[in-house]
Amino acid sequence: MKVLYFAWLRTKVGVGEETVEPPASVTTVGALVTWLKSRSPGHAAAFADLAVVRVAVNQEHVRLEAPVAAGDEVAFFPPVTGG
Amino acid sequence: MTVRVQSGDFDPGAEIAAATAGRADIGGVVSFVGLVRDMAGDAAIGAMTLEHYPGMTEKELARIEEEAHRRWRLSTSLIIHRFGRLLPGDRIVLVITASAHRDEAFEACRFLIDWLKTRAPFWKQEETGAGPQWVAAKEADDAATARWTRDGKP
Image (tube, rainbow over all chains, first blue to last red; front, side):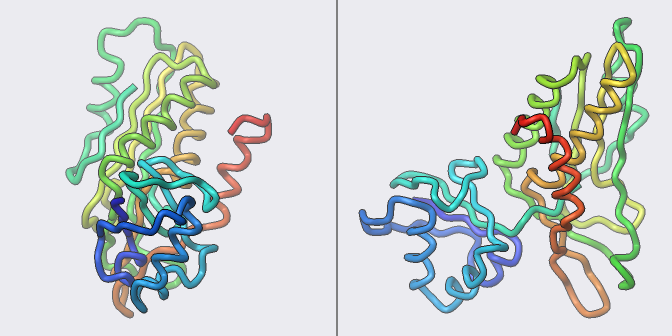
């Protein structure tokens, strides 16, 4: 599974992209977040307030309840500020 | 329907001319050009850098554009959004909508820029006297998008 981080989430985690192999019990974005938070203090800081974190699975906006599986591209980022 | 994501500048007049060249069915063209301001609240901005999500950005802009074409009868449309480092006064975004009648072009253009601001994966980082600052999303932008969902459409 490929995980991407953008804007200040990338700064806090320390990398823009990482390949991870979460346990089989991780089947939703929410469970993935909980698992990622245990990887480093940077990850924990990035996911400290989920109210300001948005997520896309395979390049489509989804909610924390959305399913994830091996091979997915999961991206975490703040609310967007383009335009 | 066209979407372009690029670091370079664009020429709004040339884009309108190109989008409408050879067309006799278009009654009106509406364009929106977004520019970099030199102030954020009361803080002066030296420059800003736009980060985006290559791949998803293009797909999301295309999805937004398709939604506009579902809602209004548009002859053509164009979205250009820049990324990278920009200075105050620089152009950031261009939205062009063309239709047989002006009302549809006006509404679709407003819809596109409102939706783009809350859905397209871009993030602004401003260079201020206090160092680089990530721009926070505005509730006013969410409200502007929400007004397009009154009819129950997503």
